[in-house]
Length: 91
Image 1 (cartoon, rainbow, N blue to C red):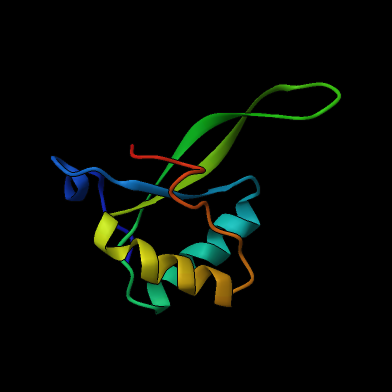
Image 2: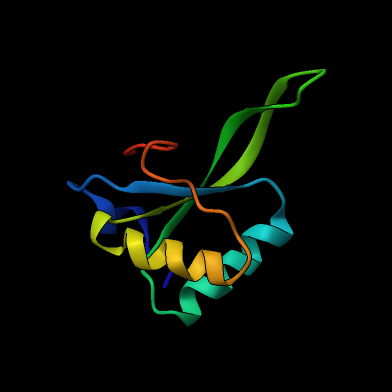
């Protein structure tokens, strides 16, 4: 279920995915909510593009460390490739 920023206060949230399209973000929200996973999502910038790199805006998905394994499993089952710990760190 989607949580507000206050849910994560004082805890290190884990980045599990950066959605680059609204359609992907909405679908991932549905998957995580249906699975009962508490998550946070916020818009932020990332560097994208190969030939013409530039800053773009995406939806960054976070979970608490104790929910990361389940969230990643749900994502894989739904066709997503989650960021692993070495890919994305704490918030």
